[in-house]
Image (cartoon, rainbow, N blue to C red):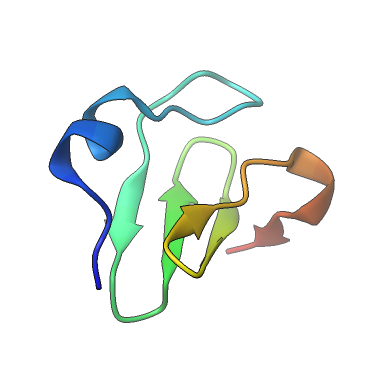
Length: 55
């Protein structure tokens, strides 16, 4: 299952408030400005900076 397009429109990086790229295959949202990856678990984005992984 994928994230809803409307949700993807409003989600931003919690650190820099920049745009995110949805990587459906990896179940992740990438912030290229901060070089962080936010996991998507059970179709729910985990938007916690402390749980993000480096790109």
